[in-house]
Amino acid sequence: MTEGKPHGGSIWTRPERAPRGPVPEHSRAKIAAVGILIADADGLDAVTMRSVAAAVGTGPASLYRYVVNRGELLELMADQARGELDYTAAADGSPTARLLAIAREGRALYLRHPWLLDIQAVPVPGPNAVTFIEHTLAALDGTDLPGPARLEAVALFSGAVRLIAQTAIEQSRAGRDAIQWQAELAAYLTGIVSAGQYPRLAAALAEAPTSVGSRSQEEVFDSAMTKILAGLLSSSTP
Image (cartoon, rainbow, N blue to C red; front, side):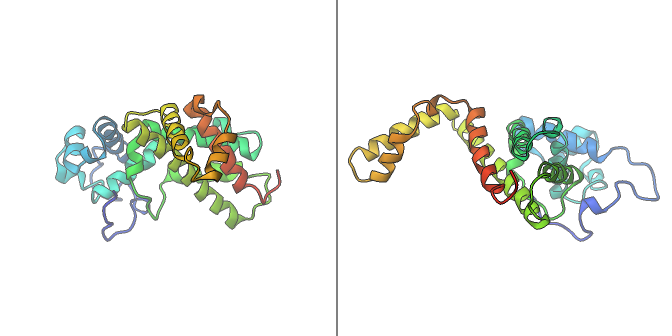
């Protein structure tokens, strides 16, 4: 979790290099890249000022010239990871198709860097987070959603991608994949409704297609996101 902010505002409102003084030996990008490598290998708890400083080749005290605390280090890492998003597939098509392309990119990003789920949102977005917002808003071109509703849609869209990815990651950490989980859940619920105490649940299960349990994680994700997007865009022009 992101640590408390000190006095001095956001790291994004401070220049990377002071107007005077020696040229920094390292950059924010390099420090963030090192932190990402550590988090990918050993989890977010392994990312400390000391571990990152050692990997960069400097002392912990020197690292404070670039970030004022671990919280800012995590902000740098999260934003640099978001720079991996590729919006090429979202350049054309309907709003639903464009948003689904961005959603797939977001899901893949979380699967590559599951530690992103452990970093809280910060009040001031970094440059790559702002780029994400811009591309998501661009995907809403052609709808009649007003500005405030578009910003709300971006927030809900981002949250949905995060939540679905989190479910998949938690299943993976528990040693299960989506297909196995679906099969176990279906068997469990079928056993519960067999006694007749939950008639509506029994009816819903009876109408569920038998192929659901054999769908890939990607197909399940696309299906869920398509339904969510239909709701988000319901008040707009198709």
